[in-house]
Structure formats: C-alpha cells, structure tokens
Length: 178
Ligand SMILES: [Fe+2]
Ligand SMILES: [Fe+2]
Image (cartoon, rainbow, N blue to C red; front, side, top):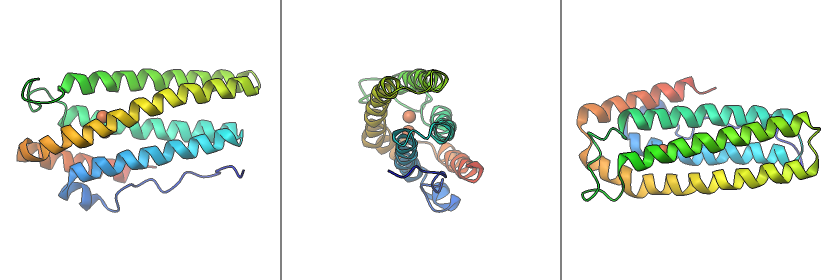
C-alpha cells in the first residue's frame, strides 16, 4: 500500500458562494469531506506512516471542531430548535453527541501519541483502529440524524437572519481551511 503523503483538497463544496446560497447543503457536503479526510488518516495509519497519520488527524480535528462550533452557534441554539414533542431530537441531544465526539477524538489522539512513543507495535495499531471504529460509528449516526432531521426541519424554520449568518460563517470557514 502506498502512504498518503499530502492531505486531499480541503473543500467539500466548490465555492464559498455555495455555502451562502444553501448552508445546509454545505454542512452536508462537509460531512462527506470529513469522512474522506478521516479515511486518508486511516490509510496513512495502515501504511504505518505515523507522522503523516498524526498530521492528518490534526487537520481532521481542526476541521471537525470548526464544523461543530458553527452548528452549535447557529443551528443548535435551543431557541431555534423546538423542544421535544415538536421535534424528533432536541438541540441538547445533538450537543451531547458533539461532547461525546470530542471525548472520543481526544482518546484516539492520546492512543496515537502513546503508540508512537512505544514504537508503534502491531497491537497498539489494532487498539487504535478499534477506538477509531467507535468514533466513526458515532459520527456516522450523528451526521445521518442531522441530515435527515435537523437540517430538513431548519431549512423551513430557521429565521432568515440566522440562515444568512450561518452561510457567511461557513463561507469564511471554507476560506480558512488549510
Ligand atoms: Fe453535529
Ligand atoms: Fe454536522
């Protein structure tokens, strides 16, 4: 297998104008882009190219954290996501999942650092991939639920002012991507 030496193209949507016009499509595209970035990290891991794997994980985390921070600022404000009973899942449920994602990602990062420090034996690589599988499953479910429920509902109900602010924040984030 050939190691990935450089990160892939960072933008899941072609231009910042796309994010302004349809921020929910941009958020959905960013989910796919994040999945792709994580796959590049795992390919480097399988090649045992530890410095590249660590660098790609750093870039992935930076991108994911920015994505979640924008969601929390604009679409996971309880004032704009109606309470349970009117909505399939509450803003708090999505925020709790973000906290779990951050926690798992920190565990993965710690394990990767330990594996490199210990000379990266095969057993530690397997342990790392196990932890990453848990993180991937958590994110797959989270992204799916956002796309099927949260974004679909907020396309109709998010106030125009917030819709525009979300688009601008995503466009700026796309421009800031490494
Ligand atoms: Fe999210
Ligand atoms: Fe998301």
